[in-house]
Structures are given as structure tokens and as C-alpha cells.
Image 1 (cartoon, rainbow, N blue to C red):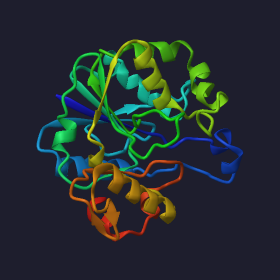
Image 2: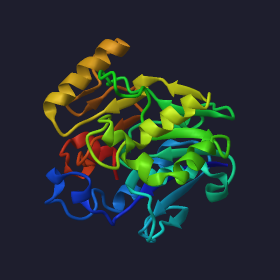
Image 3: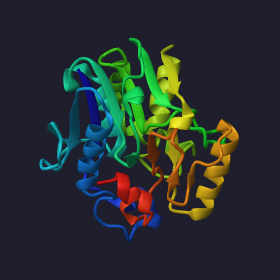
Length: 263
């Protein structure tokens, strides 16, 4: 059984992340992000799966909802690391997905992408040009349950240290970010295997139109394609569109193509 897992939390203090967010209140996302991700998976995957959400909202749409603990040292995205603990999630193939993504075509090859024990499969960050950034994206982890248990064990021994480590060394811009850096670096240090799926399957989309023009150009140059997303047209190689970055909310984009797939 493939288990596709996600994290959704509503309780947050944005002022602790950065002073620039002092006026932000409430969650960045709403519960329908979980439902629409689930609907997209059901519509675009040909196999069977269990959809698991780790959440402080018991009413999100999922096959199984695991309650987030109310009193914990673990902050924000770092809760995702618990999926590396087989006693927490169960056996089989595990996929950990961020919820800021829209599935736009058949995703069977991505979900069924082969993974070996001790290996992590992610997708390539083809849009990365900064040397301090890692070559994988935390929006997608696939692994054999329990075979990367050390990712969780190392973190749970010093959660506060690791949650601020990448902010303090200026790898990330905001407090309590850097979870994907931790995962990548820990697996590399332990001699684990890291594989990347074809980058042309993934589009990167931003709230800034100028950035989207740059992403289109990068995609075209990298994969020898005529476009990535042009107006309301999507390249037919793309399977998933990632709306990464803080406050780049899917529901605030007015593009017609989003309405066709995110429902």
C-alpha cells in the first residue's frame, strides 16, 4: 500500500517567523487545500493509495487524520519528519507531499516512481540558481517506510537546535524554515541514496509575474521546450505545479487554468 501523507496546521504565530509578518493572522492555507489535493490525486492516479493528513483540524478530508499534538517543541513544517518513523505512519512506500501543489495531469509515473530501501526520491529543483540551495524540493519525498528512520531520530534528539540551525547560518530567510535542507544533508551525511524524478514533470509558479516569466525561460532552456505555462496553456509534460514560497497562495491566483485543475 502506498501512503500519501501531508501536513496541515491552523495554529501559528507569524510574528515568530519574521517581523515582516507581524500583521499576518491565522493559517496560510485553508482546509480545502487538503480536499483539493486529495481530489487531484484521486482523479489523476491509476492505483490505490491511503491519503493521510497530520493535522490540528480533525475535519480535513483524508482517509486517515492523525492529530497534531497541542504541546510540542516541534514547529511548522518540521512535523513532516515524523513520517520517517515507521511506528508513526506504518509500513510500505511513503510519499510526503506539500499541500501548495496543483495536479494537472496523470501523476501515476510520479507516484509509482521506483524507490529502494535507504533511498529518498524527490524532484529536481531545476529553478535553483543559488549555490546555497539544495538540489531537491521538500514538496515531495518518497521512501520505504522505516529505512530512513535516522532522519527522525536525529531531529527528535535536538528539535530546537535543528529548527533554528539553517536560519542562524543564513541558509534560509525565516525562522523555523530549512526542513528540506535538514533532510537532504542528513541523508547525505549518513550515506543514503538520493534520486530525482524528471524535472520537466514539475512547474514552479509564483505570485510575481516577472518571476513566472523567468521560470518559463529557465524551463524552456533546461528542457528544450517551447513554454512551461503560457497564458492558460500548460506544457503537456507537466504533471504537477508547485506554488512554493511564503504566502504564494493558490487561491489568490486568478488564472483560469488553476480553476480547471484545483477543485
